[in-house]
Structure formats: C-alpha cells, structure tokens
Length: 326
View 1 (cartoon, rainbow, N blue to C red):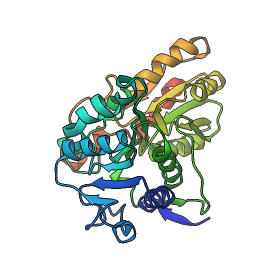
View 2 (cartoon, one colour):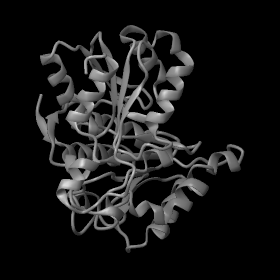
View 3 (tube, one colour):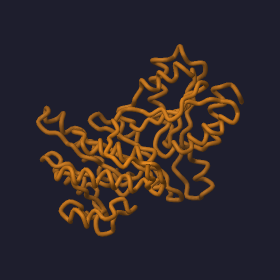
C-alpha cells in the first residue's frame, strides 16, 4: 500500500468526487491560483477550471452564504476556511442557515455540503489562530462533525462527507498536512459516526480524536512499557459520537481517560464523561479523567504552548491515576 501525505489524501478525495459528480465544486481563499494555503488543492484548478475551483475574497460570511445557497439549489459545495478560527465570521451561515435548512423547510430543502479546513494549535500562532471549535459545532443539531487523525481516515471520511445529504464540518490539523500514512489505492469510504478501535487493551480505555491521537498513541506505547494495557479508541466523528464503542470498551476495562485539544468546559470529553456515568456507572472502578487544553487563551511563547496543550506526560499521568498506579 502506498504512503501519501495527509494533504494528498484530502486532495484525492476531493478530486475523485469532483470527477464522479459534476455538482461538486471547491471554493475558498487561495484554493485556486495559489493551489491552496496549505497546498491541499494543488493542481485542481488546472484539471477542473475556474468554475469549479473558485478563489474567493477574504469574506467568510459572503462565500459561506454563496456555498449554502448553492447547496440548497442542488450543487454540492466544498467550502474551505483557511482556518476554523475564521469560520466565526461565517458562523451565522453555518448554524442558522446550513444546519437548519432541512428542518426550517420541513424537508423541502437539503444542504449537502462540506465546510473544511484546519483547527486547533499549529505552533506559535497565538490566541486568535489556535482555537478548537469542534464542541461548538457538535452542539448544533443538523450538522455532522468529522475530525480525522491520519491520511487514510481523512480520505475515506471526506469522500463520505461530500456524498452526505447533510452539512458536514470537516476539521483537519495544519500540523498534520505533511503527515504520511498508508492509503489504499482503490476507492473506499468510511462511515461517519463510527469510531475505530486502534489498539485493544484490558486495563483502561483511552479515547481521543484528531491531532491528539498522535499523542495518545505514544502514551499507549509508554504505558505498555510499564505493564499497563490501554485500549485506544479514535472517535473520528464528534457528531454523531459512537457511544456504543466507548461504553462496550469501558465495560471491559472499567476505566476511562479522554484526551482532547479543547478547553475543558462544555467539551466533547465532558459529554462523553456524562454518557459513560449514565450508561456504565456500575462498571467504573475509578472516576473518569480528562486531559484537555489549559483553561486559558493560548499564549505565544513556545514554552507556554507546550504547557497549554495535552501532552504524552499528562496522558500517562492520568492513566496511572485511574489505574491507582501513581
């Protein structure tokens, strides 16, 4: 199986779907002439032309609204935000238009489209360019929210997102665009809403998604050296959340740690903790622990960036705490 970069996997997904369905098109800042701010759309303008790969002004509210209108009228747009920090400018179109289109029209209109782009910290980008809004969008009925952690998942999930009849928020990581991974050459799709058990274990369940999966994988390896067997689950999707996979794992391991790059209040890990105590309370041998970003805006200095984000060390410490191996 060949290895390609995360950005190449995304490009393949969009290119294959645009070849398959002439209703699919891409729009956003620098997606055409510049080949994408992160070179995700490199070469797509040359193949599909300026009517299907469209450079927009720096006006997220405007081009998000154009994309929503296009979706309501039978097209299937892929709307790229240069970063989801900038999606806040367009959040009215995402939440009050795209997410509610089907409900407000009593099923007369659908809004089959994808909003995609990078999320979270990407190094020393300071407070306004380093935020995570997965929980914001996951809070909204009518949206699906996907956060892939590797190139193969990125391709399979993006193809499914483009074909979905609902608006899908597809959140990537700027720091993962150059990450290489094995990706099948044949066509494949991955189901939205189904988690993946990356590694089976018996002592503790470790749940994460997106970029934090890289740190969770390393933590699992470190824990194994100390004789702790962690079952690692990649959510892939945070709306809908695959609660059953998590619950079944907790019933086996009796412990749960969740790793998430987000502020702790009202986060995805908060929701999972609530559901687990509702559905598997009697199986828990320790309180659920969360490893999140620090409850503050992200400083610029590199040493503070490291202290702010979830780390392998904090994850290992949390697992040891629920296993009572301080």
